[in-house]
Length: 120
Image (cartoon, rainbow, N blue to C red):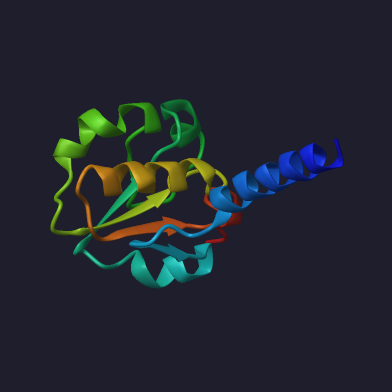
């Protein structure tokens, strides 16, 4: 019975680790590093929060593409340009980054900490 408990614990630990390990091909930056990149016209900036969240508070230069609409609206994004993705805390933007990678985007940057970490 002890082996079963160890096995369950190991699986839970593995599950947690997989969720937080960086995905190959997705660059992670902090909100402070984002300040240096906001003026780059060669990059596309998308905010994957809901429209209500975006309208309440957003960073100038970001376009709102809610996560649940990302796959259909991804056609509006250029695959040959870097996409910088942000959300409230960094969880939805990481999910969006993984989805963009599956859709064929190769230059993807996730903002860790999201809008919550942003200090203008």
